[in-house]
Length: 170
Image 1 (cartoon, rainbow, N blue to C red):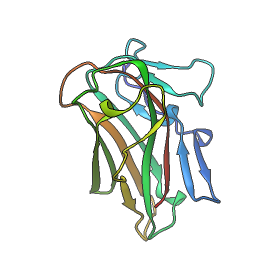
Image 2 (image 1 turned 135 degrees about the horizontal axis):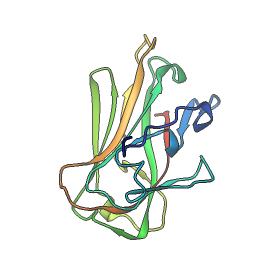
Image 3 (image 1 turned 90 degrees about the horizontal axis):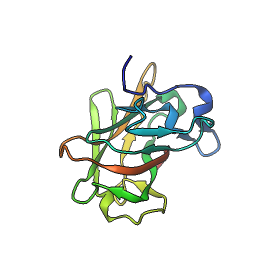
């Protein structure tokens, strides 16, 4: 048994809005390092659509992926993590998170300093400079992979709530 949470890729946790051509991914669809250990992450036991709360980790790694068939070839999309900090959050000052989106070997990276945000208010990460990817014309069997990381400082962090990830056209 592993202490890492492997996301449930059920269709009900990955909601495709065909009108807006967007995809909303609920936290239970994400792969979360240390997510299966209740000392580090807290999932709601009764609701698959609820946020997931980081209690404490020194290694933040949250990954997801989606089939490119959800998206229009040739279009550019942004990946946004909708999150908030609990009032008792800790460890975020001077420890930015890094966000990544990738198709094949093409990777985009952004950096965001969560320590500048007000606790208790939902915000989108990254803020300012969008994290984007362009859908190739050939989408057969291809995926977009994305993630949020803070693995370099080795200090304890907590109080981050991940509400959902939204991928939408730019």
